[in-house]
Amino acid sequence: MKKFVFIVGAAMMMAACGQQKAVTEKTLSEQLADRMQNLQQRGYMIGHQDAPFYGVTWDGTYANAEPSDSCDMLRTVGDYPAVMGFDLGGWELGDAKNLDSVPFTRIHDELIAHYERGGIVTLSWHPHNPLTGGTSWDVSDSTTVKSTLPGGEQHEKFQAWMQRIGDFIADLKTKDGQPIPIIFRPWHENNGSWFWWGQKLCTDEEYHGLWNMLQDYLRDERGFSNLLWSYSPNLDGKWTEERFLARYPGNDRVTLIGEDAYQWGSEEDFKAALTADLDYLCDFAERNQRMFAITECGYKNMPDSTWWTRVLKPMMDSHPINYCLLWRNYKEEYFGPSPELPCAADFKKLYEAENTLFLKEITDNKQNNSNE
Ligand code: BMA
Image (tube, rainbow, N blue to C red):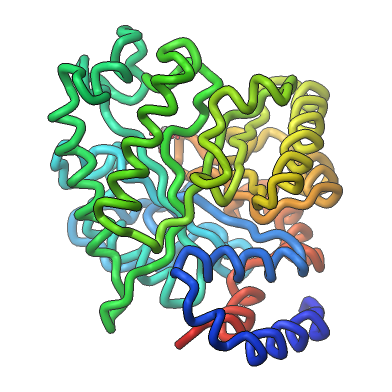
């Protein structure tokens, strides 16, 4: 059993009583930000993408699957991830299943279920290429972003896509009809050039145009004050302030700065790049009073059974990060733990560490900070 820092909890309860009025006036996304900041005083949360749908040895995506309790993290350590990630790719076309074959009805239900069990939820979006009809990864035409902007040939189509995304978000409500606070993370990994909104696929102005168009629509036109906006480029290794700022949407548009960081090559290269990026981005976040998270992470098919505590954990321990979301587990490509894998014992060590937060450790805190 882990020890909790009761002093922090007591201080937060006192603060919550003293500021009852201020707290009730905050939007759902501001309340979520407060909760995340409070949690960060205890450590960082661990998350997992698509946790309730499939895993290394099981698949619950079939048509009439029951809401699942087969989550690989739960099977490995006996607790759910604190943060669960879900993806909307395909919804823009009206598909019944997302790009990873998960029925949208299940995404809707499991996102709500995780929030209702006290967890934190995040949505990403891998939309199709509106110009070519290909996937997010279709980078064959560098005018795609431009085509979605006002005056562009795909602008009308893209507006319809945004409307569909808005309709999905509007449906994410608790049983008593309350909207769910969601970390929303569009247009990610934009410093790479593998998505149609990537570095070489649009100018800085076009990228800002794309970001602002989506945000202005969802936040202002549709009025979704439950979305906490996350800007999350990819592992870079050589950020400069000038280059980071060139596509940063701005403090008025971003609450959480993130980075997607996978080890693809050598351990040495990964450590050097991530350490450099965490040094820079955590400092940027602090200077700008934003939060920071590793918004996607992993080492594909985990070839190293001690990676969690030997490689990743020391870098997270030495930087002020809010959470780390491991990417999805499925049988051909997995980034999280599973009891059958050699890395399971090491993941249990990560779980046992005092500064790593899973669902059970964040749910008491939720009660201290909620308005209900
Ligand atoms: C990528 C891979 C793909 C997947 C996509 C969206 O990183 O995992 O297989 O389709 O994310 O989830």
